[in-house]
Length: 293
Image (cartoon, rainbow, N blue to C red; front, side, top):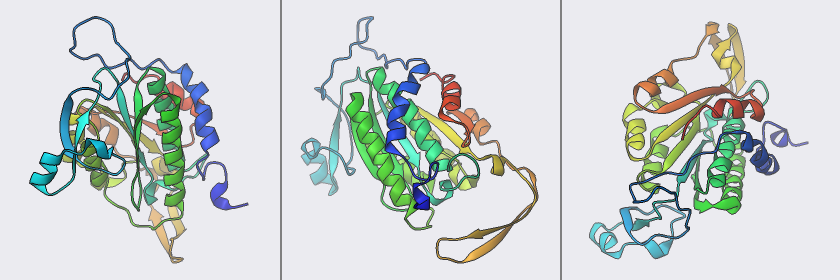
């Protein structure tokens, strides 16, 4: 059997689809209530009648929404962002960079990240909202534009499976997280919810300006994926083999190696929680159920 197809290593579309039923144990995510008059939330579908804002074109955008005037003035493609303000839109950001593609227990950190995002996505569509995907790794990002209902989640899951497969077979280059955060700001309308599943390894990922900038435009929730080994690693010398076939020895002092990334995010006004990649989806539901969207 191909090692990349083993449970917990490869991303299984059937497993992510099956999380729909498990996600029902989570509290329903409320639809966004805006300043429109009336005390009831209307779930009417539609493209919308007004342009919410204008942003740079990204792959997956509807070419019919290209704004000719701004495109001509700037020389770069721009689109009009029109949407029904009574819809809740959530962007699921899946970190599939090389640093996420490892784990010592149940699953790779990248697989656990995809499972957590799938649970969130199923609850969003159950509440009448729409889901979009930005899966990023060493290569080109995979983008799925916002869609509602089950077909929206099927498209998102298909995008995650494809992006994860490409990441497992891809290069070892580690792009900065700030690039993906900037792309998310360009993709989504103001006020859309953004869910980022990442390990936030090192100070480079804790870019305060990029994280707070995205949170200012779109409410950001960070799901920090950790592995038990990195949180409390036994001391010693550990051999690693790299993608190019070369090897290296990493010496760890042992003890608690985690940092206070979640606490720092809270200080910046960003919602965040941490969970272990070894947690089964049932355990993730219990953790995620404490979040209010």
